[in-house]
Image (cartoon, rainbow, N blue to C red; front, side, top):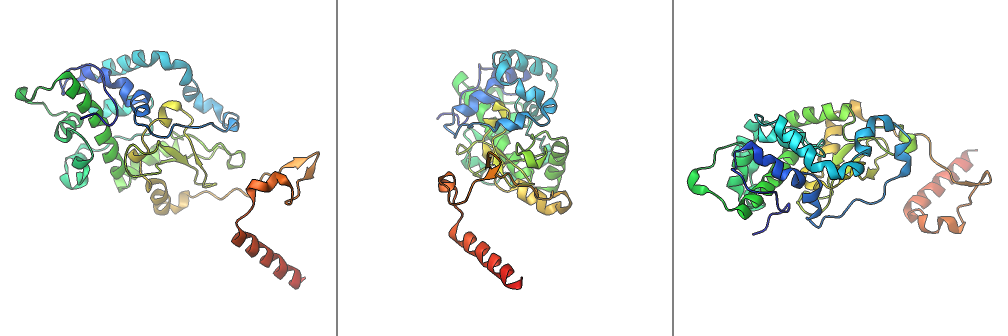
Length: 298
């Protein structure tokens, strides 16, 4: 048996909070890169030109990789008396996650089917809920590592279900309002806050992306730590159901569209420049039809 999110750190009791530091690297980038998920690609350089002052912490992620263990130690030390959920959501790189109510996790109906996806399911659930492990169930160091990574996976899959409930949407609203998920890099979206989304509801397929409600574009998160989170922990439904339930929050689509020019002249559609950007034939025919109808009215 191998952990779905990669090995954690050293051993330690399941319920002891000091072992959280041993999983710190696993909960952020190190764990997810072992999944074989599609890695993040290049970012649009324009995204650094707008609202960069609000993204300073993310901009420093790449430069501070060497300090990851130290950061995790500080977080662990400060949260020694806190819950596992609070510790996990407080890890650097896990800002996309909200805290799932424990009563939601304790309802078996909400966890239907997850025991077949998560190894050491019962141990992982006990870890998430801070349940003491019986002395006779002592695990080996290798098993402990699997349980630690399994707990992260279990929480992520529960999280994907929780955020499509009313309580979950309210928790994510606070993050959306403060642009905790980042902003759209498109110039004409003018810094529109984005929402997290996955390309699959099954784990270990794709990393998380962000969806822009204004242009409906899909992008990689700006932070490399966040870009390594499994997309299944947010699911394919959340941003769209959220906007359907809050239509007043749907922004107006950008009225401007970028037009490429050479020496001030528009490039003709017949140019080889557009060779790989030809419109769908059906859309082109509809556009031509509307143009002819307009010409007839004139």
